[in-house]
Length: 138
Image 1 (cartoon, rainbow, N blue to C red):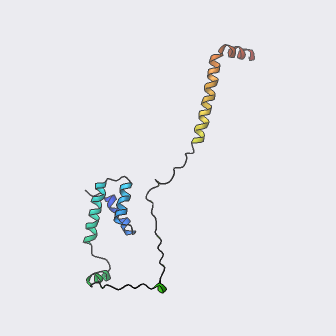
Image 2: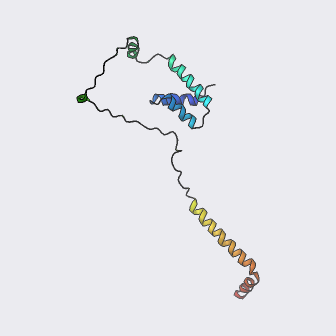
Image 3: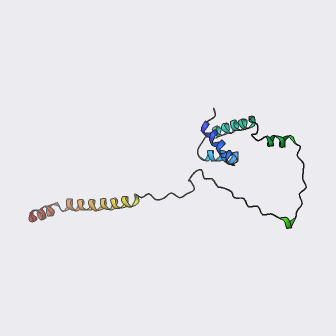
């Protein structure tokens, strides 16, 4: 059984110029089962093979025999080709997690708890003196 979510994800990756292998690895790294990914990839390859190319010029090129051209090295005519490779991130696993905002609150609560436990122990140990002190105040 082919999982439609994996299949549509592979289609999307291929439409954006990603290789099938990289797309499959992305799904595997995301925690999908290897068998599910392979099934979806096979289904996608069968699907792609069954559709004729949308552009008729591509069909004509396939029918014409391929001619080999001689490539000559000409240093004067050297053209610089710059390719920009877009890096797609599928997850944020490589980023360091931000510290939770609750750390300060937890620290304050722990200190408050220690102070209250100290006060309670002092009252328990010196209860007679505390009672005398409170009676003198009232």
